[in-house]
Length: 324
Image (cartoon, rainbow, N blue to C red; front, top):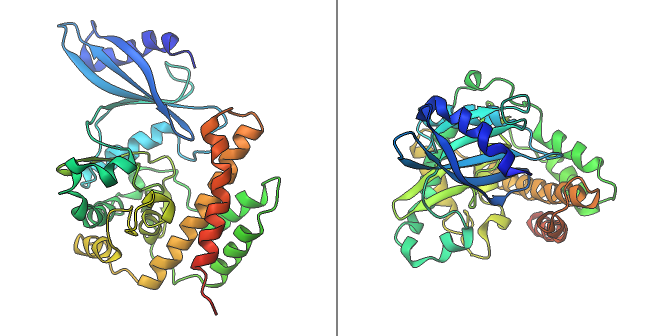
């Protein structure tokens, strides 16, 4: 992606916020997720003041279900009900001024790398409080009014991911077996809410004062609120640590934080079901992202490496199934 080409149009977009003399400086690619490119840069206004910002860009062939314009709307709606996050300064689609979907956000300082969050001595005091705080934030996420972000997918998530797996070019028997078990053992349905869809260690900005921002709403949809809690507990997001909630906390802390903040009662059996579903879903996502590399939609060592994660998730699922 030619970032130099984007600097001029991006500066024009930001002049509405920072004045006619605003210009972009130091636009650079900071990293890439599975379906978004993240860039850091500074905007310099007409008086010479420098403001650090983040630019996120869509990538061709990505599997994200939520356009960046809607993701920006979700971040703004979340802020109104108490979800910590960056201020959104601008957003646009492929037909907009940058010729690619984008969102410009405030840069929030803090740690996002999970292994550092779990091991950095500077975060030792806050780690024991993170699970409960995540529960409180998820209760706020689930208060986001759905009518403020129209167009979110409301399909049955088990059906959605079963169809995605069925389209894979190779069979995955362990994943297929797990999905069949999940279908036969569904917990009672709860009222649908806005679900973040990717709330986990790695999509949070953490500082010594706690969670500073929730990132990456690209998988948001309407669904069961326990889906978000179960996803946070998936083994992959523990990054080698023993604690079940993001590697930093206990189930009891997460649940008590969620219930205390008005998120409603949490049935532990249902939470376990959603943790299993999240494990299956992550395994299927690994399949999808690896195929993007294999089929040359986006050549990436990161995407290719996800292929070996499929077997890890299959093993985890088999271990989670009841023995009788």
